[in-house]
Amino acid sequence: MEFPVTLISAGLLVALLWLFVLKGRGQIRLPPGPCGLPIIGNVLQLDKRAPFKTLLKLGERYGPVLTVYLGRQRAVVLVGFDAVKEALVDQADDFTGRAPVPFLARATRGYGLAISNGERWGQLRRFTLTTLKDFGMGRKGMEEWIQEESRHLFLKKETTPFDPTFFMSCTVSNVICCLVFGQRFSYDDDNFLHLLQIIADTLKFGSSPRGQLYNIFPQLMEWLPGPQHKTFARIEELREFIMKKIREHQDTLDPSSPRDYIDCFLTRLTQEKHIPTSEFYYDNLVSTVLNLYLAGTETTSSTMRFALSVLIKYPKMQEKMQQEIDTVIGQARCPFMEDKKSLPFTDAVLHEIQRFMDIVPMSIPHYTLKDVSFRGYTIPKSTLIIPLLHSVLKEEKQWATPLSFNPEHFLDQNGNFKKNPAFLPFSAGKRSCVGESLARMEIFLFMTSLLQRFTLSCPGGPDSIDLSPEYSSFANVPRRYDIIATPRCQ
Image (cartoon, rainbow, N blue to C red; front, side, top):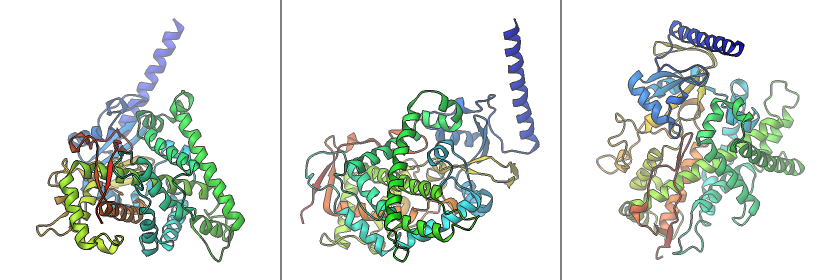
């Protein structure tokens, strides 16, 4: 009888500890939320394939600021544009922390820009934004790189159905490769294609139920067998590739003539090697390049792949965009960013594609680095903050038909483009995506270039296209379709 008594005692202890947590929750005036279970919290209440949908429903019950427990980790969820803006913009300094997301921490070994805080985050973010701008992000030089890369899209495919995933990934990745590595890669480079497959598989795993379980119970998932071990082994291949490129840069570095991001970082590293507080050292370089390479490849290429599905599903809309492009640009020259102001309908459609896709519905979680007062509640230090971007991009108060694809969301009564402050696919505030201006430029230039040169369709016709995501958790991953890119008469 000794074993059952011990087991019962342990169970009572866990229950008492949980009651203590709940009691403390009331004393510090946490936002309201559903009761959870010991150890696992509210995990069983979440839709494992689309947890953001459960959080949205909980927001309807408990209000726009609510508390849930993901395992033992306390999380405060912000629902709707007003709550998200108030936290990330109006109280930006209180919510600049980044959560130590276990999957990202394991992949980056705790270094780099993505999940850093404090002085490390400040130094790396300022340097990264400045350096990327110096190399043309959002400027004319980058525009020319993207225009050149667009010429490689869909070559020699004519009317043969093909999967565009390969082309989208290569094209977008080559832009970030030019910025970070100072070079582009051939679409026939097997090593390059292998790395792109790793990036795609990493996003897929991160958006799977197992990927989310790893973030909630990392120690348990490290012990259990499963695809997480293969995923991390393949991420190590990416790290090895990056370290090889860094070594090549070290051997040929000319500080007076930097070629790319790595050169600039290595120069700064040398300049500050005797400064104890400097964050410019090797581990941060490797992981920051990994951050840029992962984020700069898959999210934008997935968005453009989704855009192809949208244009095929709505052929009349595609035709209207082509007419507008033909009128403003014609077919003899490449599109420029300057053309965007003269292409209001095209711009509206591309914005609506990003809104409707809702690529990162829960954003990358923030983190409180101190006790924070927010809307009359006290959010304790070390609390996960989930800005539910899904609730912003699909909020009825902000959008006329939030659950339907509707470019009119971005057009006024005269057909001119109009902004909407709730358009936050890149998040908001001090932790917004560092590559936002680059992604916007790529989406506009690549998609207008494609429509200028091709008419898009698919073997099954528009009705065969399903715009709901194939995977939906950390990211909404679009479904894959074979498409036909028919060259337009020139």
